[in-house]
Image (cartoon, rainbow, N blue to C red; front, side, top):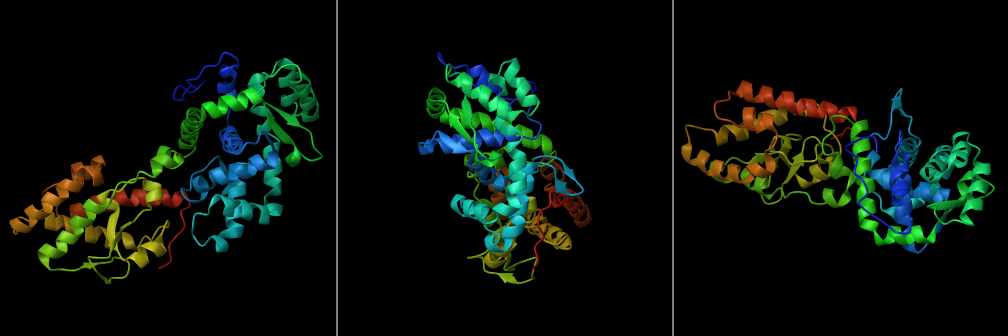
Length: 396
């Protein structure tokens, strides 16, 4: 495979040509093949080996939904702000039409499938465009010269007839296609031996698809951190606890007698019930770094959710972080500083990993101006980068 970062499929079969199966994901300019094959993998455990192109496309929309709407990752190029990738475009259309019904929540699979059906007229053009590419090109590695010629010329009617003639005498092909009166109603029929192979090696194949998909999406979103964690849901679920950082902020109240306050409203916070808010959404930064956390009330944190605050709050955030820094490195009150530093050291491994933060920010000797300039510059760049990914703005 062309990109040496890509993962090969570590499987073997006496009956089946696994090398051809591995090549299914080659020549993948728009990334459709990742989502098409992943959708098939998600559909076959239901005991089904026959489903329409539209069934697969609906599952593609479900699979890519969070990638596009929650993590704001691009699946392809944009022209004048519009997605050229038909899958991404369909998802953005659906999100725009169903936004009020979603209420800023990540919908369940069943809810998404309902909304796809409800707004199908809006999505149909993108769905038809998708049928013009991936169903045939995915299985191109299994084809001989004649079959590839039909695919390249988009003579899909002849290709389906050719494919079905061969599958009657040879079960080598991954799937064949059942003709219908419209492209969306054409059906995929999974070869029985291939279906058995896929079910037996389900976890390995899904890991292979997602790893290579993550590389593709990272290339489409240079500079966005933690793409691998955003693509693999089981990895994303392993969020680190904010307990250590929370205990550090609580200790500032207990040791100084000064209450916590919220930078967005100025309100005092109850140390028994406050949250820690990620100034730039966690879905973008993929970490729990101390330099991006600030105390907030639970209602504020819930309201802000996966959105960016107005940039004017950056100054308040930086100033409040300097307040914490000042307590940690206060030479005039060694007792408080030592107790806080003990808690700071406990959360350092978990909440301080960026080199600029450990080497320049949270070190002794920074003046107020130095600290605030370093934090504002670095956090500001992360903020601006998230804004370029079209994160929604939070209206307080």
